[in-house]
Every structure is written in C-alpha cells, then in structure tokens.
Length: 570
Image 1 (cartoon, rainbow, N blue to C red):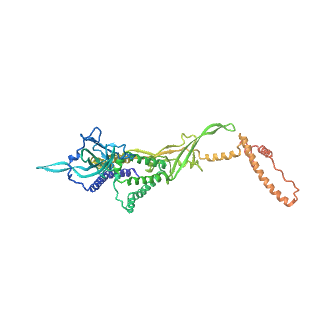
Image 2 (cartoon, rainbow, N blue to C red):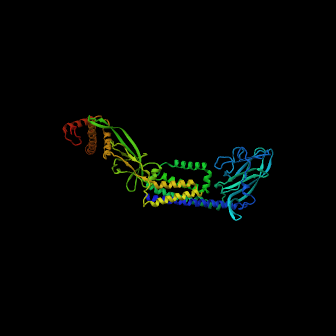
Image 3 (spheres, rainbow, N blue to C red):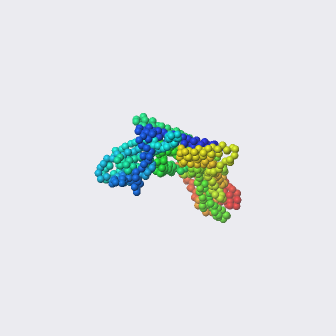
C-alpha cells in the first residue's frame, strides 16, 4: 500500500464516518423514541389534565436531598437509587443506596421509596412521564412560542409499606429515550419529586416467542457478523503476515488479557454510556470474537522466519607449542535475532512489537544487505535456534541492527495535495457541526479525527542490519582442527604431535600388512602344512613402530618418503 493510497483511504473513511454518525444517531434516537411513545397508550401530545407548571413543581426539600416531610405531619419519605454503572450493587437491600437528587437521570427501571412506619399501610404512588416541548399559539393579533408538557403518560402503583423502615420498590416503564418524571404519594402533596428516566439500552425488550425466533436472532445478530468479520480479518491478517513475515510476537495470553481488561474496565467505568452507544450488545460481542480470530492468526502463523544465533569469538594473544606468537579463544559473545527470507531472495532482521509489525506490513524492512557474504552458516539440530553465524572477531559489534519504524510527515500544501487537505477540512467541519447540534458524540469525533490524521501523517521507515562475517574458510579450519585434535589430543608440543601422527600412520600400515600376511599364511597352511607345524608370526610391539618411525625420519634427511611426514625444517 503506497502513501498516496493510504492518505486517500484515510480521508474517505474519515469523511464517511463523520457524515454517517449523525444520521445513524438520529435514526436510532428517533426509532427508540417512537417505540417508547407507541408503548405509552395513555400518552397525550397536548399535556392532558397536567400543566407544565404543575409537573415542574417539586416537593419541599429538607436538609437532606430527596427527603420530604409535611409541616404538620410526623411522616417522612425519601427516594433512594442504585447507580446503573455499579454492577456489584445490591438494589433494593435495606442498607445502601443513594439519595435521589432533583433532575437526576435514573438508569435503572426501579426507584425505591423509604419511610418510617409504626404499622403496615397501603399507599398509592403516582408517576407522570412527559417531555418538555414548545408550540406556537395565537394571542390576539400576535403569535407566541410557549413551552408545554407533551407525550404525557400517567402511571399509578399500589405499594405496601411495612412496619419499621422499609425499602419499597417502585417500578418504572422502560424508556429508551429520556423522559421527565413527576412522582408523588397520593394524599400527601408535599411528598413530591421530579427527576429524569432513561432505561439502559441493554434493557430494551426483544420479541422472541419461539425457537425459530431465537435461531434467527442468533444468526442475524451473531453468526453473520462473526462469519463476515472472520473472513475479512483472516484475509487482512494473511496479507499482513505475507508482507511482514511474522506477527507482533506477544503471544496469545497478553493479547487476550489486554483485550479482556480493556473491555471489562471500559464496561465498569462507562456502563451507562456504553449501553447507550451500543443499543445491541451483539455488535461488541461479535467484534470481540472477530478480534480473537485475528489475534490467533497474527500470533500463530509466520512465513520464512528462522531464529539465528550470531557468535563472535574473542581472541587473545598466546604462545604456540613452537614458541611463536599465536592466538587463543578464551571468551566469546552471542546475540540472537529473528530473520525472515522473502520470496525475492532478500534477508531481513525482524523484531517483536506491534508498531514494527505494522511497519513491515506496510512495506518497511530492516534488510541484511550483506546476507550473501554470510557463508559461515551452520545448521543447528535440537536447539531453540535454527542456524549459527560466526562473525568477524575484529568487528566492532556482532550485529548492527536498527529496527523499522514510523515517522510523522505531512505532504506539502501544493496543487497535487490540495484535494486531501480540502477533504480533511470538510471532515472537521462535519464533525464540529455534528457535535454542535448534538447528533454525534464528541468522543467519537475526536477518536475518528485523531485516528484519521494519524493514518494520514504516519509513514513507515526502513531499518537496517549489517554483520561483518568471519572468513569463509573458518568452518573448514575449525573442522580440521577438531579432526586433528582426535589424533594428537595428548601432545603438548608440535614435535610430539608429529610423532603421534607418524606412529598412527605406521600402525595403520602394519595392520594392513598383518591382514595380508594372515591371508597368505592361511593359504600356505592349507596347501603345504595341513598339520600346522610351521610357527605363526608374532605381533609387533609399539616400540618396533617407534623404531621404524625413527629410521624413516633419519633416512629421509629432509625428503618425504612413502607414508612419512616432512621434517621440521621444511
């Protein structure tokens, strides 16, 4: 994906989201309001028998908010509630609850009445649900705009007040759009409260009357979103892994824990707002499942990735067996890395992390430019590394690596990019208008604009990697050294090593001669000595081999004989 296509896509998505958000919000609110109004059979657009002034009238507030008490009465009432975002609350218990202040928006569909009672009694509680609107009326020759109470719905509840200090639940109808509420106890005009009510979106009733309705709801609400989202996320993740070689590399557990914590903390802190934003919780649940599918793909699949170990021997000065200056290896340094081989033959070093993964997915690489010179490669078996590379002992560092990343850079304001800047200005204007007129949440506008600007200005940056390899013949030298060490492992000087090599060669030749002699003797015995009267030859000792070596070395006088070695003077 090029920078131009990324900018264009970000601008289109930005404008589309901001244009669609107010429309969706308006349709959702209007639909919920229509459903609520349709369920209110006793609603009256003209306000019926209740005037706006009467419905706005509140009871006499005492020192404690929500407490009501008459001047000549010894009876006291107060309303309590449990906040909707307190998921660990125990609504309706004898202890707990908060005093309900005036004009507070109640999220639950139940409010609780408390009082002191010396005996059981029955009470009638009246509740009027209404909205404040304006209308145009004619007064003489002029017209004026006046407020009035619309969509009035009067509900009564018969409750029993037990002796003592009871907590009496008062159930409210479900309202998906906000309603004003005027509540009072019959016969006690001073026991009067005004507040607002809007049910949580998760309390919206569902029309499921049969198994077929349930199955259809599951398919439409969950299965369809999961299947479509799973295919889309799977295709996107496969493309990203093919380009990046490997995923972020965090593992499944951190992803699942982080995703669950983010969802849980967000629900606990903003339960009301989340429930109001996502009218149907199936969208969040389906998105959670689709996110899990994407996480599994990113953390499970890879292409062309191997684990490499880079080894750099540390050389120190030493003295050879002959007394000359030499080198010894007493220390060494190790550094591991993950490398990926692309389909084009290039080799790149990769690192773990979400931002480097995104950079690789958008084409950035930390290419190992001298990969063709890394011939000192050894395959490793039964190891957590796949291969071993030997670096030059005199190199300043084993592996020079700067990972791929991102930088923020905006294109110049010229004729070529003027269309993009105009689209961004239009997005800001539409978002500001949506917030001003209340058609869209400010957080949605801020998040959309911020994400779009970040996608527009961010540009992937290539990294770099370099290794100074050891000489190509080091593998042959090391292997030869190990093979030679098996024959001269007891030698402490170079002369002793040469003698041991000569002795080994003589022993091998002697074994061959003995095999030939045994074969010839067997044939002669069968032909000429069937009674075995001829004595068999005796085996030679190692001392005889040493004498043979010494005689050959003395007789050669600097020349190389059959089966011998050069002298020290060569």
